[in-house]
Length: 103
Image 1: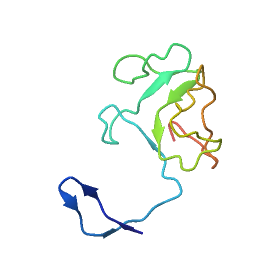
Image 2 (image 1 turned 90 degrees about the vertical axis):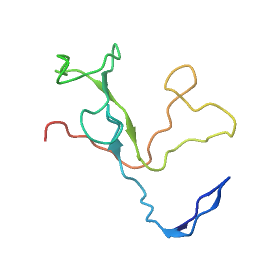
Image 3 (image 1 turned 30 degrees about the horizontal axis):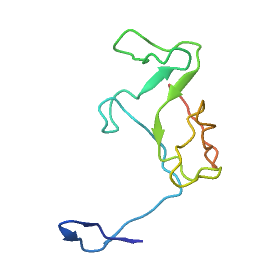
Image 4 (image 1 turned 180 degrees about the vertical axis):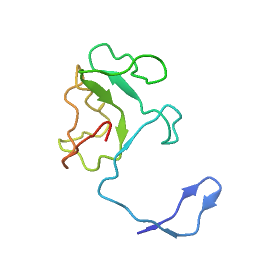
């Protein structure tokens, strides 16, 4: 696929890019994909950290991800997305996603 960027300064030259159906990545504290992932306890939403003395053990976690690919459910332009609570259900990823922690 060819991509051009257009903004107030003009339009860039076309560049070839590869678009994948999904490329899951955990968001990290440093926001550069390196270091500790953003994980919270699914009950109290406190951050789970190795360095901060709050490790996870036998509990459900909330992981913050991007790049899960296509999602199901109808989206209505101008409406807020679901939040799993008062704004309705989250849009589920259409592809199967699995997570392995510690190997």
